Length: 118
Image 1 (tube, rainbow, N blue to C red):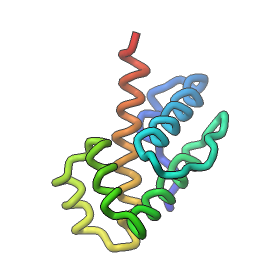
Image 2 (image 1 turned 180 degrees about the vertical axis):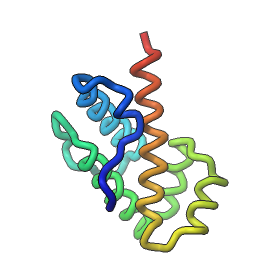
Image 3 (image 1 turned 135 degrees about the horizontal axis):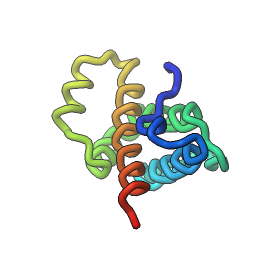
Image 4 (image 1 turned 135 degrees about the vertical axis):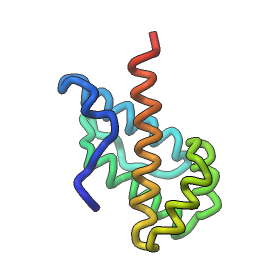
């Protein structure tokens, strides 16, 4: 896995980044239910979030591909984009690519809520 990169993190001042990461982890846990997650640390790191997400995606690919489709639909990832990415990816790369796409979408949701919710 490459160095963890969390979209939108750099748009926050340092003192708000921990809050953003915590909310992002909570959003991922909510949207990937009923998958089991490790307990979210008080200050989750980008690496922790990315590794936990990729582990969950690997589990889904290996054991519950139907549930993976339902989760991707619930998260609202464009099916055509996901199909195109998966068609050009090796089997080993698929979990990492899906994790990056999910992370991008979920980070955007959290960023929007933190900026536009009264």
